[in-house]
Image (cartoon, rainbow, N blue to C red; front, side, top):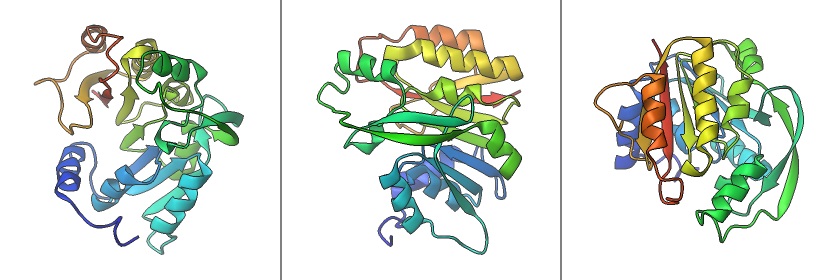
Length: 237
C-alpha cells in the first residue's frame, strides 16, 4: 500500500493534465478502475472518487489500497456498467487489464495482432448497473473516465443525462464502437472533442473539435495498426 501511494514524476504530469477537468470536491467516476492508477490521481486532486471495478482480483486489491474512510473521499462499486441492470458474463484474462465483456473487441484485437498472444481462459458472472443509477446514488460527475476494453458503447448507453466531461478508450480495430460513443454523447447535448494517444497525457490538437471533425480524424487512423490506441475526451459546450 505504501508503495502505491508514492508520488512520481509521471503521476505529477498526469495530475496536471486532469486538472483541466477536475476541481476539488468534484464527483469523478472511474469506470474500469482496475488497480487504481487513475483513482490515485483523482484523489490527489481532492475529487470524490467512485471506482467501478468488475474483476474480483482487482476489487480486492482496491479495498486494501482505498480502505473505508470517514471523509468518504472514495467509494468502490463492485460490478460493471452497461445499458441496463442485470448480469453479464465477463471473459477474464490473466492479464487483468484486458479482461472484457466484448467478444467482438476480443476477436478484433486478437486478429490484428495487438493481443495475439493473450488468453481469456476464465469467465466471471458480473452484476451490472448503469451510469444513470450511479448518478442517482452519488450525484452528477464532473468527469467520467471509461476504460472497459471494447465495452464503452454499452457503458455510455446507460447514460441519459449529459456529463460535464468524459473520456473513453479507443482502438482502431473497433472504431465503429468509438463513433457510436460520440453519437450517443451528442444526442444528449453539444460536445466538443479531443484525443490523447498512447497514455501521453497530452491533447493531440491545438483546439477542441466538433463531433464530425473528430470522426474525420479518427477515420484516418489505420485499422491494421495494432500499436495505436488512445482516449477520446469530450466536454460539454
